[in-house]
Length: 311
Ligand code: SF4
Image (cartoon, rainbow, N blue to C red):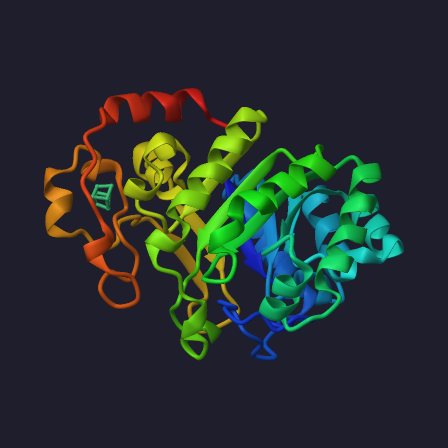
């Protein structure tokens, strides 16, 4: 994986997701500020930039930022909800300016669930339009899915639908819902238990593996993905001693995340993967340590797979 930097360019959004981790604050910065951030990332020798939000396509100068990043020899990708990109002229403009990679947020293959979670009746329809344009555009497309109570029971169906209909998608990312400082705290119904998605996540990972796709999972303890521990984002960061740099528009500002370990329970001490597992995010606050169980897997095998599986 290339060394990528994140740049949050707007907190506005054209959806209203029940678990949004960066809800609108009206905060943004002028084009000149973000160009300087791009210059800084270029000097730090990052290979690319991920423009995020809010919804980055609502930032009026996104195409200029992509163009500036290209001038600085940085590749650009965006994390988008796929609504504005359903306008082919808009998407064309971004691609012309140098956009090479899109990470599309999809929560469900069921239109009713997708609409409920995003508060947008046209959400899935626009995502389908975006995907049909992307098929012709020939740029890299990843899918990002926030695991929550409402899609926990059909994760493999989402993956099957996407890989059947859009075989050009090769990489998938799952993020277990982050209940902190966001809308999920006003919608606690969206927070899953680990057991709610255990089986479906396993089916989804197995299906992607069978179909030759790659994937990552974040905020999921390794005991809930034992066959694919090498695909945990945090475990990979721990093993490879990597950091993540993110510019936030709120008071956090520029954050260099170097620590990848959350909560550890009593049972973790007898687990052979403890040293390379992040443990449980928000342990015994939003997620229960009673759901954890120790694994007896050779951690050197996991490390070898990480070294081998480096994309
Ligand atoms: S028991 Fe603890 S250390 Fe082991 S996989 Fe689960 S969370 Fe990680």
